[in-house]
Every structure is written in structure tokens, then in C-alpha cells.
Length: 233
Image 1: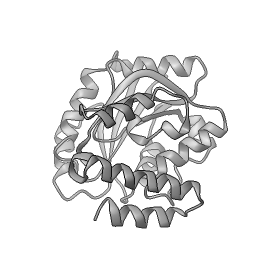
Image 2: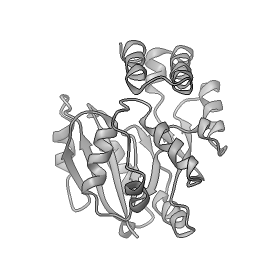
Image 3: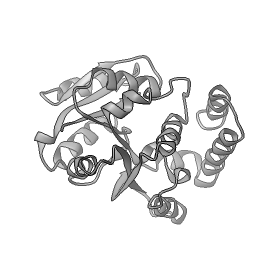
């Protein structure tokens, strides 16, 4: 089995090269990876040029329509690996992450994620990272990354492209319903930049509102309008 790593980007020139280097440096074996697909949603900051300079037998730049769910599905459609590993551009997997993922699939765990920690010592962000050890869909998020066999991904129809935000959680909800989810007890490190920009408590309040609105039946469009108004304003 080989892994296709799929990274959606939009204006990630500041971090994408560091991430790609980190991925290659932390592999247990390059033989475990079929490809690294960087799916660009129309960046305007030179991200494409930076990725193109690093393109090699592993790294490929793919153009896509904007929208994380759309970009993730675009990468999955052209991928060649038996295992798909979806990774945010500001999240850094643990050392030998490829071996951990393959080991789980060999144990018939066909989908899952890593635990997560932020690159911050703020006590609340440390607490949020601590929560990711628990096997609850309420403790999940896209920053924890997502592995899934390509067979299972196709069976459940991939990401729901109507969700511009919350697409990761919507997929996890379906996987939990199928009892197909495992949490690998190793930590992926993700950026706290959004919390630093907006403020820890304010952003946490916005995220909690998004979850509550979803649980109360809000549509994907309503969630996006709220996210656009509060988080991306």
C-alpha cells in the first residue's frame, strides 16, 4: 500500500515550502508514498511558483476551483495511492507518520486521524490539543489531518462540496456513523496563527457557534455566511 498526500492551498506561499520539506524529512520510508499532490485553488501570492520549483517525482501541483472540499476531491480523483492522506497547509505531521497510517490500515482501520497540538503555549490551546486524544467526533477537526483508504472514500462519496466550511467535520460524522475511525496516539502540530490574528476567546466563540448552528440544523450556506462574516471579515 502507498499513500497519496493531498494538500489544498490558497495563498500559502509563506508556509508551503516548509511543509513540503518537513513531510519528506519525517517519512519513515519514501517507498510508502506514491505522491504529494498540492491542490491550488487560485492563489494570488505566488504559491504556485514556489510549489513548481519543488516539483519532482513526488510533488505535483494541481489547479482546481477554490473551495477546500472541492480541492480535496480534485486531488483524490487524480491520486494513485491506495490510501489518501488529507493535510492542511499549516499542519505538520509527526515523524514517521506514513508508517503509523499504513500500520492502522493493515489492522483494518480504514480511516482516522492523529492527535493534535498547537504551536502555542496558551493554556486554552493546550487544553484543546489535550481533548483530541478522546474518540469523540466532537473532538475532531481538519487540523488533525485525515487518512482514509481510497476505496472507502469513494464508497462514501468523498467530501460534500456544498460545505465551504465544516467539510472535515461533515466527513467525520459519516465515518463515525460507519464505525470507521481511529485516532493515532501521535501528535500533529498545527499553526495557531488564526487564533493570534483574531484572538483566542473570540475565535473560539465563533467556532463554537458554527458547531452549535450545525447541530441545530443550519445549512452549509448558513455556516459559510457566518464564517465569512465573523472569521474572514
